[in-house]
Image 1 (cartoon, rainbow, N blue to C red):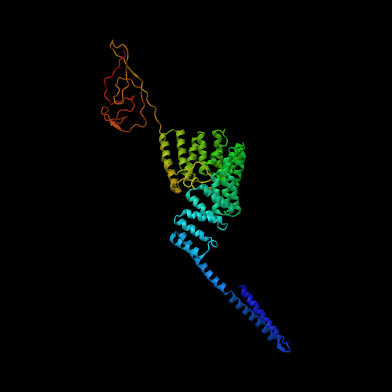
Image 2: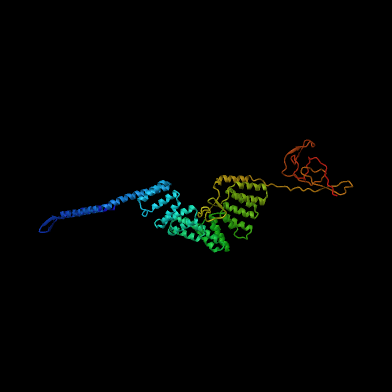
Length: 547
C-alpha cells in the first residue's frame, strides 16, 4: 500500500513538472568541440529522464546476470526448506495423533531436509516419536539436549518433568519444576507444580512469594491469586496458632481481607484473639463471618468461646446468633443444642423440628433422639428418630476429590490441588429435591408414637408353710414356683395391678350368667412368676424341710 502511494506521488510529480515546463518554453544551447547543439527545454528534460531510466535498466540487468547463480541456489534452498517444514508439520500432527510410523518417517525426512541446529522442533519431533514408540531413554536424552540449549530450555525441562512424574520420581520432578521457575517464573505449569510441592512440604513463605510473582506477571487471575493467598495464609496461621498467637492472628486477619467467606480463617483469627484474652474482638470476628457464611463450626466456636460459661450463658449466645441470621437451619440447631444443655426441652424440640422442616438431615434427627432420651426416655420414640436419621441425607463435611475430612485442609491429599476442600454433603447422589425432604420431615414428625408409660414390676414375698406335725416343729420354706408351674392357692401373694397394655380379649363366664370377664393373660401362663393364674389347677406344695 505504501509503495503504491509513493508511485502515485512520483507520477503526479513528473506530470506536474512537464506541464510546468510546457507552459514556459525556451532554448538550450550547448557548444562542444566546435559543435553547437540547440534544443528546447522540454526535449532536454525528456532526454534526461529517458537516460536515467536506461541507466537503471542496464544496472538491473547487469546485477541480475551477476547474482543469478546465487538466486538459483537460493530458490532451490527455499524449496528444500519448504519441503522440510511440510514434513515437520506432518510429523508433529502424526505424533499428536499417536501415529508412530508416520511420525518416525516424517522425522527422518525433516532431518534430511532441514538442519537440526537451525530448527529445534526436529528434536521435539524425535523425542515425541520416541515416547510414542516406548523408547523412554532416548526421549530423555533428547529432552536433556533441549534443556541445555537456551532456546529450547523450557521445552526440555517440561519434557523431563513429565517423564519424572510418569516414573513417580517426585523429587526429580520438583527439581525440574523449580529450575524452570527460576528461569521463567511466568510458566503456569512450572509455577503450579512448584507451588504444590512447597505446600506439601509446608514451605508457606516460599509458596506465598511465588504466588505474588505469578500475580505480578499476570500468569493467574487476580481474584484466583487472592483466594489462593488467603488459603496459604490460613494454613500458616494454623501452624502458628499454638506457638505464636499474634502471628496467627495477623495471618488469619489478612486472609479474611482477601476472602471474607473463608470460614477456617475466621475461626483461627477468633481463637487467636481468645488466646490473647480478647473475647470481644473474637466475638466480633465470628459474628461478621456468621452473617456472610453460617457454619456449624463458627456456631460452636462462638457458643463455647468462654470455657467457664454456664449452659444458660451458652443458650444466650446461641440466641444471639439466631438473631443475626434468623430462619437459618444452622442457627436453629445451635439454639436447640444449647437449650438441650439447659434442660429446656420444649424450646430444644421446637427449634430442632423447625430446622428439620427447613433442611432435613442426619444431625437434626439425632438431636431429636437426644432430646427424647433426656426428656422422656421412651425407647420407641428414640428408635423412631434413629430410624429417620438412617434414611436422612448426610450432614455436610469438608470434601475434596472424594475424601471426607473432619477438619479443613489447605490442599487435597489425593491430587495436591490447592483450595480443594468444600463444605458440602459427601455424596451428591443422596441429595433430593427440597419438596421431598420437607414432606419426609413432616411425615416423620407426624408419625412420632406417643409416650409409653411403663408400670412398676411386681415384687413377690417369700411364702412360709407351717406343718401341724410334731416332728415338723420348724417352719418349711417353700421355693418360688417356675413360670411353667403355677403357685398353689394357699400361698399369699402381694396384690398386683393389671397392666395398662393388657389385651382387650373378653371370655364368657358361665357362672355369672353369660357375663364376660377380662382375660389378663390371653390364654397363656403369666410372664411374672409372682402373678397368680386363676385358670391353673392347684398342685400339692413342695416343702423343703430344714433339719
